[in-house]
Length: 177
Image 1 (cartoon, one colour):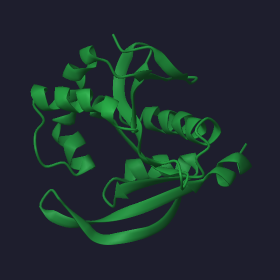
Image 2: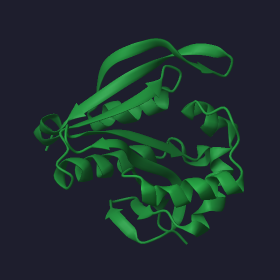
Image 3: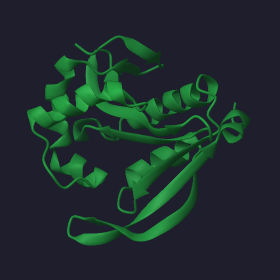
Image 4: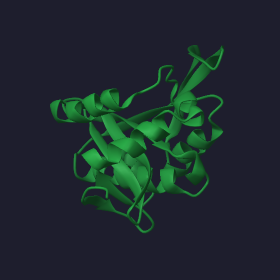
């Protein structure tokens, strides 16, 4: 069972990641559709997933499980948090069985609200591969603006691909309220 609820939304809950979630995380992160969408190239075994989990306490990053009721469907987090400059990077993935159900959008909206309202951050950034139209749609629905394209920045699935960089300012987020 996932950890306690950290953020509640209408359709999803963001919960803490607990040891019992590691099997789910390892299974999904090794799914070819997921690891390719993240640009990963190496498999993650149970020990590596446990090391990542144990390392979470040594990092300022925030990693949360996206859940529908008690069922995990993905993860979302704030990475590279810079309190001095007031920015962080948003990253997420959802299990392919749950693609197109609105989980990533709902989770991103919750996390963005938390980042701006509770953490007093001023800017969030996110990256999406050119071929990942679903992720780009999520960011745009939430209000992120494309700030640029890093051409042929990554080598994914046998080819060099562009990475689209998105940004969202706190004042832009609040203007939508």
